Amino acid sequence: MGFRSFWAGKRTPEVRKPFAKLRFLGAAGNVTGSRHLLEVDGAKILIDCGLYQERQFQGRNWENFGFAPSSLSAVLLSHAHLDHCGLLPKLVKEGFRGNVYCTPATAELAQIILLDAGKLQEEDAEFKRKRHKRAGYTPPRPVEPLYTMEEAQHCFGQFRPVGYHRPVRLGRGIEASFHEAGHILGASIIRIAVRQEGQERIIIYTGDLGRTGKPILRDPETFDRADYLLVESTYGEREHQTTEDIRQQLAEAVDRTWRAGGNIVVPSFSIGRSQEVLYYMNQLLLEDRIPHLMTFLDSPMAVRATRVFEKYSDLYDAEMVQLVLRNESPFSFKGLKLVESPRESKAINHIKGTVMIIAGSGMCMGGRIKHHLVNNITRPESTILFVGYQAQGTLGRKILDGEPEVRILGQMFSVKAAVAKVHGFSSHADRREIFQWLQHLKNTPRKVFLIHGEKESLDGFKAYLSERTGWDVCVPEYLDEAVLK
Image (tube, rainbow, N blue to C red; front, side, top):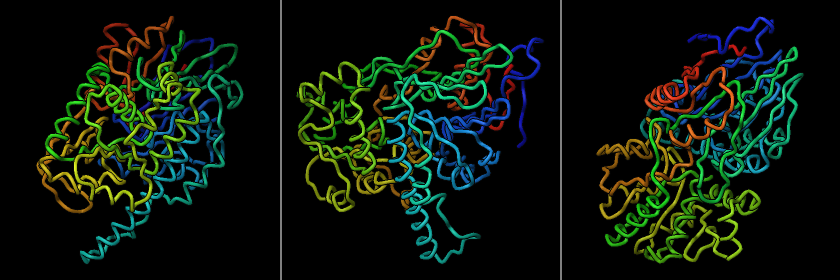
């Protein structure tokens, strides 16, 4: 597929050349694989370098980047989720030698998640090799991991942590800064200022825009000016339920499963979502609204991430600060067990009575959650409880959509467990929240690009936003190129 080019903004005679060019190399017409290449006066800046997680797009992870990694000036990383940072090891392996700029918390969390991703890549490749051998199948090419743990580690020396609001010079007339996104710890909205021939253009990339009033973290920062915006639209066609709804739904799922004598299995992203689940469990236990069952955070990555959350307490909101001061931290409540070793993880299966098991990955595409699904998905008394977005083509989406049988670890299993979802848990802003965030702008943007969403969400939010603002809004497709004037 070639590039589809279009102008973004009016042609102004006083500027003889474009301020910049944008190429949409991921999260364009889909949710994951966030990658956006900004070219300014010879400098090439990659905004995010994410892994595709939808099954139908995973082949793109193995393709060429569409540019020479060695030609990049820098990478700006919005946050540590795998669909935003997960291809950094491949980028470095293929020749990138520049700096990866992000906040200090993002740098620590990204290194945790990339090591884990490298380990899972190695394990998945080995599992496939063994499965092929048992089946007597010879694949057309050797099964190799996308990258290894060692290759993941190679990119760590290129991280350059930068605090919120501290400008970073990326080239002549190019300056970037990071601002709180309220999504996960350290997540950023990235503001890029480009100055040429006495004029300035402001480009704002929301990354994953968080929600107002969510626990643990402060609200997203707002801006009064932007010429070009790249706006995530994961929930651009819907609105979330309230915090009280979350608590009620979680309490009902726990109580119902406890009465049935099964386990509550929670596929959860290790960074952000797992800590938020612990926050609400802690609240319900403090209020004595649910049975006092054991809760296992069964993910070495989530355990390490939780320790990073504890370290960066200066990023907490006021309510979370008060919990810590009262020794009621959600990261250390009675009955919570942080599980790291495989032996401890396997031992959970021998516990009698109801337990909650929070494990990664959030979309059930790898990690320990698959083993817990194998042990619980055929049990009618157990509950598979989803607390986050499930992209099309993922195992989590298939279970949530009600498929009667699903493939896990190479075998088919009947889905007999109860399947539930706590709505409103998302750390992504919904349609109303994105619109309210955009309303702080005092100027009319030259162009708004909607990214990071499925087609229905992108198209729905484009119509919603265009109707209410009259702004020039577009939905770029994969490999599209925009000229910024």
